[in-house]
Length: 410
Image (tube, rainbow, N blue to C red):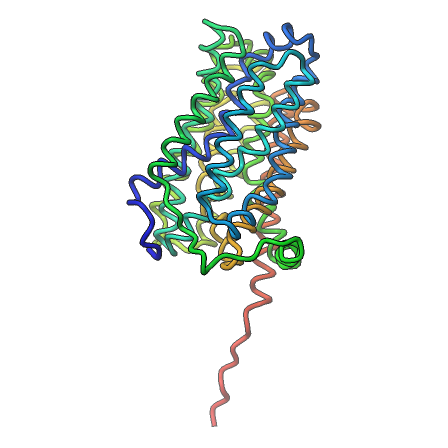
Protein backbone atom coordinates (compact mmCIF):
# COMPACT_ATOMS: atom_id res chain seq x y z
CA UNK A 1 0.00 0.00 0.00
CA UNK A 2 1.39 3.40 -0.93
CA UNK A 3 -1.00 6.02 0.42
CA UNK A 4 -1.50 6.70 4.13
CA UNK A 5 -4.90 8.28 3.41
CA UNK A 6 -6.48 5.04 2.23
CA UNK A 7 -9.09 3.42 4.50
CA UNK A 8 -8.84 -0.23 5.40
CA UNK A 9 -9.46 -2.61 2.52
CA UNK A 10 -12.65 -4.04 4.04
CA UNK A 11 -14.16 -0.52 3.85
CA UNK A 12 -12.69 0.55 0.51
CA UNK A 13 -13.93 -2.49 -1.47
CA UNK A 14 -17.68 -2.10 -0.74
CA UNK A 15 -17.49 1.68 -1.16
CA UNK A 16 -15.87 1.46 -4.60
CA UNK A 17 -18.22 -1.36 -5.61
CA UNK A 18 -21.23 0.75 -4.62
CA UNK A 19 -19.88 3.64 -6.70
CA UNK A 20 -19.57 1.31 -9.69
CA UNK A 21 -23.17 0.11 -9.25
CA UNK A 22 -24.68 3.26 -10.78
CA UNK A 23 -24.18 1.85 -14.27
CA UNK A 24 -26.02 -1.47 -13.93
CA UNK A 25 -28.68 -0.01 -11.65
CA UNK A 26 -29.36 2.79 -14.14
CA UNK A 27 -29.69 0.34 -17.04
CA UNK A 28 -31.16 -2.86 -15.62
CA UNK A 29 -33.65 -1.58 -13.03
CA UNK A 30 -35.99 -0.11 -15.65
CA UNK A 31 -36.16 -3.19 -17.91
CA UNK A 32 -39.29 -4.65 -16.25
CA UNK A 33 -40.98 -1.24 -16.53
CA UNK A 34 -40.54 -0.90 -20.32
CA UNK A 35 -44.15 -1.85 -21.20
CA UNK A 36 -45.59 0.55 -18.60
CA UNK A 37 -43.26 3.35 -19.70
CA UNK A 38 -44.17 2.81 -23.35
CA UNK A 39 -47.85 3.16 -22.48
CA UNK A 40 -47.50 6.20 -20.19
CA UNK A 41 -45.09 8.11 -22.44
CA UNK A 42 -46.71 7.02 -25.73
CA UNK A 43 -43.34 5.66 -26.87
CA UNK A 44 -42.44 2.93 -29.36
CA UNK A 45 -40.27 -0.08 -28.39
CA UNK A 46 -37.46 1.42 -30.50
CA UNK A 47 -37.70 4.71 -28.59
CA UNK A 48 -37.53 2.84 -25.29
CA UNK A 49 -34.38 1.06 -26.50
CA UNK A 50 -32.84 4.51 -26.99
CA UNK A 51 -33.16 5.18 -23.24
CA UNK A 52 -30.23 2.76 -23.00
CA UNK A 53 -28.32 4.23 -25.94
CA UNK A 54 -28.76 7.86 -24.78
CA UNK A 55 -27.48 6.94 -21.35
CA UNK A 56 -24.50 4.99 -22.67
CA UNK A 57 -23.43 7.49 -25.35
CA UNK A 58 -23.43 10.30 -22.76
CA UNK A 59 -21.59 8.01 -20.35
CA UNK A 60 -18.99 7.21 -23.02
CA UNK A 61 -18.37 10.83 -24.05
CA UNK A 62 -18.07 12.09 -20.48
CA UNK A 63 -15.88 9.15 -19.53
CA UNK A 64 -13.08 10.81 -21.50
CA UNK A 65 -13.05 13.60 -18.91
CA UNK A 66 -13.73 11.93 -15.54
CA UNK A 67 -10.25 10.44 -15.32
CA UNK A 68 -8.29 13.53 -16.44
CA UNK A 69 -10.38 15.68 -14.06
CA UNK A 70 -9.43 13.35 -11.21
CA UNK A 71 -5.76 13.38 -12.30
CA UNK A 72 -5.81 17.20 -12.10
CA UNK A 73 -8.17 17.98 -9.20
CA UNK A 74 -8.09 14.82 -7.10
CA UNK A 75 -10.26 11.71 -6.93
CA UNK A 76 -12.63 12.72 -4.14
CA UNK A 77 -14.07 15.95 -5.62
CA UNK A 78 -14.84 14.29 -8.97
CA UNK A 79 -16.65 11.39 -7.31
CA UNK A 80 -18.68 13.63 -5.00
CA UNK A 81 -19.73 15.87 -7.91
CA UNK A 82 -20.70 12.88 -10.05
CA UNK A 83 -22.81 11.26 -7.35
CA UNK A 84 -24.63 14.53 -6.59
CA UNK A 85 -25.41 15.13 -10.28
CA UNK A 86 -26.67 11.55 -10.66
CA UNK A 87 -29.13 12.10 -7.81
CA UNK A 88 -30.54 15.22 -9.49
CA UNK A 89 -30.73 13.52 -12.91
CA UNK A 90 -32.66 10.61 -11.36
CA UNK A 91 -35.20 13.05 -9.94
CA UNK A 92 -35.53 14.54 -13.44
CA UNK A 93 -36.21 11.07 -14.90
CA UNK A 94 -38.89 10.44 -12.29
CA UNK A 95 -40.65 13.69 -13.21
CA UNK A 96 -40.21 13.43 -17.01
CA UNK A 97 -43.56 14.09 -18.77
CA UNK A 98 -42.53 12.80 -22.22
CA UNK A 99 -40.10 10.35 -23.77
CA UNK A 100 -38.03 13.27 -25.06
CA UNK A 101 -37.53 14.67 -21.56
CA UNK A 102 -36.78 11.19 -20.26
CA UNK A 103 -34.01 10.83 -22.85
CA UNK A 104 -32.55 14.18 -21.78
CA UNK A 105 -32.36 13.19 -18.12
CA UNK A 106 -31.12 9.71 -19.02
CA UNK A 107 -28.25 11.42 -20.83
CA UNK A 108 -27.55 13.47 -17.68
CA UNK A 109 -27.50 10.25 -15.68
CA UNK A 110 -24.93 8.93 -18.14
CA UNK A 111 -22.82 12.09 -17.86
CA UNK A 112 -22.49 11.62 -14.10
CA UNK A 113 -22.65 7.86 -13.52
CA UNK A 114 -19.17 7.06 -14.79
CA UNK A 115 -17.32 9.04 -12.13
CA UNK A 116 -17.51 6.27 -9.54
CA UNK A 117 -16.44 3.42 -11.82
CA UNK A 118 -13.67 5.24 -13.67
CA UNK A 119 -12.13 7.11 -10.76
CA UNK A 120 -12.60 4.08 -8.51
CA UNK A 121 -10.27 2.02 -10.72
CA UNK A 122 -7.65 4.76 -10.46
CA UNK A 123 -8.04 4.78 -6.66
CA UNK A 124 -7.22 1.07 -6.53
CA UNK A 125 -3.96 1.63 -8.41
CA UNK A 126 -3.21 4.74 -6.32
CA UNK A 127 -3.20 2.57 -3.23
CA UNK A 128 -2.16 -0.96 -4.18
CA UNK A 129 0.36 -2.74 -6.39
CA UNK A 130 0.66 -6.12 -8.09
CA UNK A 131 -1.12 -9.05 -6.50
CA UNK A 132 -2.83 -6.90 -3.88
CA UNK A 133 -4.29 -4.62 -6.58
CA UNK A 134 -5.61 -7.62 -8.54
CA UNK A 135 -7.19 -9.09 -5.41
CA UNK A 136 -8.90 -5.81 -4.52
CA UNK A 137 -10.06 -5.35 -8.12
CA UNK A 138 -11.48 -8.87 -8.01
CA UNK A 139 -13.22 -8.19 -4.68
CA UNK A 140 -14.78 -5.01 -6.06
CA UNK A 141 -15.90 -6.93 -9.18
CA UNK A 142 -17.53 -9.61 -7.01
CA UNK A 143 -19.49 -7.09 -4.94
CA UNK A 144 -20.29 -4.99 -8.01
CA UNK A 145 -21.58 -8.13 -9.72
CA UNK A 146 -24.54 -8.25 -7.38
CA UNK A 147 -26.00 -5.07 -8.90
CA UNK A 148 -26.99 -6.36 -12.37
CA UNK A 149 -28.66 -9.39 -10.76
CA UNK A 150 -30.56 -7.37 -8.18
CA UNK A 151 -31.47 -4.39 -10.38
CA UNK A 152 -34.15 -5.95 -12.65
CA UNK A 153 -35.55 -7.94 -9.72
CA UNK A 154 -35.92 -4.75 -7.69
CA UNK A 155 -37.39 -2.95 -10.69
CA UNK A 156 -39.92 -5.74 -11.24
CA UNK A 157 -41.15 -5.63 -7.65
CA UNK A 158 -41.24 -1.83 -7.58
CA UNK A 159 -43.63 -1.70 -10.53
CA UNK A 160 -45.72 -4.43 -8.91
CA UNK A 161 -46.64 -1.94 -6.17
CA UNK A 162 -46.01 1.49 -7.71
CA UNK A 163 -45.73 3.30 -11.03
CA UNK A 164 -42.45 3.35 -12.98
CA UNK A 165 -41.25 6.79 -11.66
CA UNK A 166 -40.74 5.09 -8.29
CA UNK A 167 -37.73 3.30 -9.80
CA UNK A 168 -35.99 6.62 -10.44
CA UNK A 169 -36.91 7.94 -6.99
CA UNK A 170 -35.23 4.82 -5.61
CA UNK A 171 -32.10 5.53 -7.68
CA UNK A 172 -32.04 9.11 -6.36
CA UNK A 173 -32.29 7.82 -2.79
CA UNK A 174 -29.44 5.39 -3.42
CA UNK A 175 -27.28 8.23 -4.76
CA UNK A 176 -27.99 10.46 -1.77
CA UNK A 177 -27.10 7.67 0.66
CA UNK A 178 -23.87 6.95 -1.20
CA UNK A 179 -22.99 10.66 -1.30
CA UNK A 180 -23.23 10.77 2.49
CA UNK A 181 -21.06 7.63 2.77
CA UNK A 182 -18.41 9.12 0.45
CA UNK A 183 -18.30 12.37 2.39
CA UNK A 184 -17.78 10.38 5.59
CA UNK A 185 -15.37 7.64 4.48
CA UNK A 186 -13.76 8.30 1.10
CA UNK A 187 -10.37 10.03 1.49
CA UNK A 188 -8.29 11.73 -1.17
CA UNK A 189 -5.79 9.21 -2.57
CA UNK A 190 -4.16 11.37 -5.26
CA UNK A 191 -1.76 13.78 -3.61
CA UNK A 192 -1.47 17.35 -5.01
CA UNK A 193 2.22 16.75 -5.78
CA UNK A 194 1.26 13.89 -8.13
CA UNK A 195 -1.47 15.70 -10.06
CA UNK A 196 -1.28 16.62 -13.73
CA UNK A 197 -2.16 20.14 -14.92
CA UNK A 198 -5.65 20.47 -16.37
CA UNK A 199 -5.55 22.32 -19.68
CA UNK A 200 -6.81 21.53 -23.17
CA UNK A 201 -3.22 21.22 -24.40
CA UNK A 202 -2.22 18.85 -21.59
CA UNK A 203 -5.39 16.83 -22.09
CA UNK A 204 -4.79 16.46 -25.82
CA UNK A 205 -1.19 15.50 -25.13
CA UNK A 206 -2.31 12.80 -22.67
CA UNK A 207 -4.92 11.44 -25.09
CA UNK A 208 -2.33 11.45 -27.88
CA UNK A 209 0.08 9.39 -25.79
CA UNK A 210 -2.67 6.86 -24.98
CA UNK A 211 -4.10 6.58 -28.48
CA UNK A 212 -0.59 6.53 -29.91
CA UNK A 213 0.33 3.45 -27.90
CA UNK A 214 0.21 0.41 -30.17
CA UNK A 215 -0.75 -1.95 -27.34
CA UNK A 216 -3.67 0.17 -26.15
CA UNK A 217 -6.08 -0.69 -28.94
CA UNK A 218 -5.98 -4.49 -28.85
CA UNK A 219 -5.92 -4.55 -25.04
CA UNK A 220 -8.89 -2.16 -24.76
CA UNK A 221 -10.80 -4.13 -27.39
CA UNK A 222 -10.02 -7.41 -25.64
CA UNK A 223 -11.58 -6.07 -22.43
CA UNK A 224 -14.57 -4.47 -24.15
CA UNK A 225 -15.45 -7.41 -26.40
CA UNK A 226 -14.85 -9.74 -23.45
CA UNK A 227 -17.77 -8.13 -21.61
CA UNK A 228 -19.94 -7.66 -24.68
CA UNK A 229 -20.33 -11.43 -24.96
CA UNK A 230 -22.62 -11.00 -21.94
CA UNK A 231 -23.86 -7.50 -22.76
CA UNK A 232 -25.59 -8.79 -25.91
CA UNK A 233 -28.02 -10.59 -23.57
CA UNK A 234 -28.30 -7.80 -20.99
CA UNK A 235 -29.10 -5.19 -23.66
CA UNK A 236 -31.78 -7.53 -25.03
CA UNK A 237 -33.12 -8.50 -21.59
CA UNK A 238 -36.73 -7.29 -22.08
CA UNK A 239 -37.03 -9.28 -25.32
CA UNK A 240 -35.27 -12.35 -23.89
CA UNK A 241 -37.30 -12.54 -20.68
CA UNK A 242 -40.70 -11.23 -21.75
CA UNK A 243 -40.88 -12.39 -25.38
CA UNK A 244 -38.57 -15.37 -25.91
CA UNK A 245 -38.77 -17.04 -22.49
CA UNK A 246 -42.38 -15.78 -22.03
CA UNK A 247 -41.85 -14.85 -18.38
CA UNK A 248 -43.30 -12.00 -16.33
CA UNK A 249 -41.82 -8.66 -15.15
CA UNK A 250 -40.95 -10.21 -11.77
CA UNK A 251 -38.96 -13.08 -13.38
CA UNK A 252 -35.91 -11.30 -14.80
CA UNK A 253 -33.84 -13.24 -12.27
CA UNK A 254 -33.93 -16.24 -14.64
CA UNK A 255 -31.55 -14.36 -16.94
CA UNK A 256 -29.61 -12.14 -14.56
CA UNK A 257 -28.88 -14.49 -11.66
CA UNK A 258 -26.98 -17.09 -13.77
CA UNK A 259 -25.17 -14.37 -15.71
CA UNK A 260 -24.08 -12.31 -12.73
CA UNK A 261 -23.38 -15.33 -10.54
CA UNK A 262 -20.98 -16.48 -13.25
CA UNK A 263 -19.19 -13.13 -13.25
CA UNK A 264 -18.88 -13.19 -9.45
CA UNK A 265 -17.48 -16.74 -9.51
CA UNK A 266 -15.01 -15.67 -12.20
CA UNK A 267 -13.95 -12.59 -10.20
CA UNK A 268 -13.44 -14.79 -7.14
CA UNK A 269 -11.27 -17.17 -9.16
CA UNK A 270 -9.29 -14.23 -10.55
CA UNK A 271 -8.50 -13.10 -7.01
CA UNK A 272 -7.46 -16.61 -5.97
CA UNK A 273 -5.22 -16.96 -9.03
CA UNK A 274 -3.43 -13.66 -8.35
CA UNK A 275 0.22 -14.38 -7.62
CA UNK A 276 -0.16 -18.04 -8.56
CA UNK A 277 -0.69 -17.64 -12.29
CA UNK A 278 0.71 -15.06 -14.72
CA UNK A 279 -1.56 -12.44 -16.25
CA UNK A 280 -1.26 -14.02 -19.70
CA UNK A 281 -2.15 -17.48 -18.39
CA UNK A 282 -5.12 -16.08 -16.45
CA UNK A 283 -6.51 -14.36 -19.56
CA UNK A 284 -6.00 -17.48 -21.68
CA UNK A 285 -7.92 -19.51 -19.10
CA UNK A 286 -10.75 -16.98 -19.10
CA UNK A 287 -11.06 -17.01 -22.88
CA UNK A 288 -10.91 -20.80 -22.99
CA UNK A 289 -13.91 -20.96 -20.64
CA UNK A 290 -15.73 -18.35 -22.73
CA UNK A 291 -15.08 -19.99 -26.09
CA UNK A 292 -16.19 -23.46 -24.94
CA UNK A 293 -19.32 -22.04 -23.26
CA UNK A 294 -20.20 -19.82 -26.24
CA UNK A 295 -19.93 -22.71 -28.74
CA UNK A 296 -22.02 -25.03 -26.55
CA UNK A 297 -24.58 -22.25 -25.99
CA UNK A 298 -25.00 -21.80 -29.74
CA UNK A 299 -25.46 -25.56 -30.19
CA UNK A 300 -28.11 -25.69 -27.42
CA UNK A 301 -29.97 -22.69 -28.88
CA UNK A 302 -29.89 -24.32 -32.33
CA UNK A 303 -31.17 -27.69 -31.10
CA UNK A 304 -34.00 -26.41 -28.90
CA UNK A 305 -37.19 -25.83 -30.93
CA UNK A 306 -38.02 -22.94 -28.59
CA UNK A 307 -36.23 -21.33 -25.61
CA UNK A 308 -36.55 -23.45 -22.47
CA UNK A 309 -35.46 -23.05 -18.86
CA UNK A 310 -32.88 -23.68 -17.53
CA UNK A 311 -31.00 -24.75 -20.69
CA UNK A 312 -31.40 -21.44 -22.51
CA UNK A 313 -29.67 -19.50 -19.73
CA UNK A 314 -27.34 -22.01 -18.08
CA UNK A 315 -24.39 -21.63 -20.45
CA UNK A 316 -24.72 -17.84 -20.39
CA UNK A 317 -23.65 -18.13 -16.75
CA UNK A 318 -20.70 -20.38 -17.63
CA UNK A 319 -19.59 -17.88 -20.27
CA UNK A 320 -19.77 -15.16 -17.61
CA UNK A 321 -17.29 -17.09 -15.43
CA UNK A 322 -14.65 -16.56 -18.11
CA UNK A 323 -15.58 -12.88 -18.36
CA UNK A 324 -15.14 -12.50 -14.61
CA UNK A 325 -11.75 -14.23 -14.69
CA UNK A 326 -10.49 -11.89 -17.42
CA UNK A 327 -11.86 -8.51 -16.40
CA UNK A 328 -9.61 -7.59 -13.40
CA UNK A 329 -6.44 -8.70 -15.18
CA UNK A 330 -7.20 -6.93 -18.47
CA UNK A 331 -8.08 -3.72 -16.59
CA UNK A 332 -4.88 -3.71 -14.53
CA UNK A 333 -2.72 -4.46 -17.58
CA UNK A 334 -4.16 -1.39 -19.29
CA UNK A 335 -3.78 0.88 -16.25
CA UNK A 336 -0.18 -0.19 -15.78
CA UNK A 337 0.77 0.94 -19.29
CA UNK A 338 0.29 4.57 -18.16
CA UNK A 339 1.29 4.81 -14.47
CA UNK A 340 1.24 8.63 -14.47
CA UNK A 341 -2.17 8.93 -16.14
CA UNK A 342 -4.24 6.15 -14.58
CA UNK A 343 -7.36 8.30 -14.42
CA UNK A 344 -7.04 9.27 -18.07
CA UNK A 345 -6.45 5.73 -19.34
CA UNK A 346 -9.35 4.46 -17.23
CA UNK A 347 -11.46 7.13 -18.94
CA UNK A 348 -10.36 6.17 -22.43
CA UNK A 349 -10.85 2.47 -21.71
CA UNK A 350 -14.37 3.15 -20.49
CA UNK A 351 -15.07 5.35 -23.52
CA UNK A 352 -14.09 2.57 -25.94
CA UNK A 353 -16.03 -0.05 -23.99
CA UNK A 354 -19.19 2.04 -23.71
CA UNK A 355 -19.09 3.14 -27.32
CA UNK A 356 -19.05 -0.51 -28.39
CA UNK A 357 -21.79 -1.33 -25.86
CA UNK A 358 -23.92 1.59 -27.04
CA UNK A 359 -23.71 0.38 -30.64
CA UNK A 360 -24.62 -3.09 -29.42
CA UNK A 361 -27.63 -1.80 -27.46
CA UNK A 362 -28.93 0.65 -30.05
CA UNK A 363 -28.23 -1.11 -33.35
CA UNK A 364 -27.12 -4.73 -33.03
CA UNK A 365 -29.26 -5.87 -30.11
CA UNK A 366 -32.59 -5.04 -31.83
CA UNK A 367 -31.45 -7.19 -34.78
CA UNK A 368 -30.51 -10.17 -32.62
CA UNK A 369 -33.13 -10.05 -29.86
CA UNK A 370 -35.79 -11.94 -31.80
CA UNK A 371 -33.98 -15.28 -31.55
CA UNK A 372 -31.86 -17.10 -28.96
CA UNK A 373 -29.83 -18.55 -31.85
CA UNK A 374 -28.92 -15.08 -33.11
CA UNK A 375 -28.08 -13.90 -29.59
CA UNK A 376 -25.85 -16.93 -29.00
CA UNK A 377 -24.12 -16.32 -32.34
CA UNK A 378 -23.57 -12.68 -31.39
CA UNK A 379 -22.00 -13.71 -28.07
CA UNK A 380 -19.70 -16.19 -29.84
CA UNK A 381 -18.58 -13.59 -32.41
CA UNK A 382 -17.83 -11.09 -29.62
CA UNK A 383 -15.79 -13.72 -27.77
CA UNK A 384 -13.79 -14.67 -30.87
CA UNK A 385 -13.05 -11.02 -31.69
CA UNK A 386 -12.02 -10.36 -28.08
CA UNK A 387 -9.65 -13.32 -28.05
CA UNK A 388 -8.20 -12.25 -31.41
CA UNK A 389 -7.55 -8.78 -29.95
CA UNK A 390 -5.77 -10.36 -26.99
CA UNK A 391 -3.55 -12.38 -29.33
CA UNK A 392 -2.67 -9.21 -31.25
CA UNK A 393 -1.73 -7.51 -27.98
CA UNK A 394 0.50 -10.42 -27.00
CA UNK A 395 2.20 -10.31 -30.42
CA UNK A 396 2.90 -6.58 -30.01
CA UNK A 397 4.34 -7.14 -26.53
CA UNK A 398 6.63 -9.92 -27.73
CA UNK A 399 8.00 -7.68 -30.49
CA UNK A 400 8.68 -4.91 -27.99
CA UNK A 401 10.72 -7.14 -25.67
CA UNK A 402 14.43 -6.96 -26.37
CA UNK A 403 16.05 -10.10 -27.69
CA UNK A 404 18.86 -11.20 -25.38
CA UNK A 405 21.67 -12.93 -27.26
CA UNK A 406 23.98 -15.10 -25.21
CA UNK A 407 27.66 -14.25 -25.64
CA UNK A 408 29.58 -16.66 -27.81
CA UNK A 409 31.92 -19.03 -26.04
CA UNK A 410 35.54 -18.42 -26.66
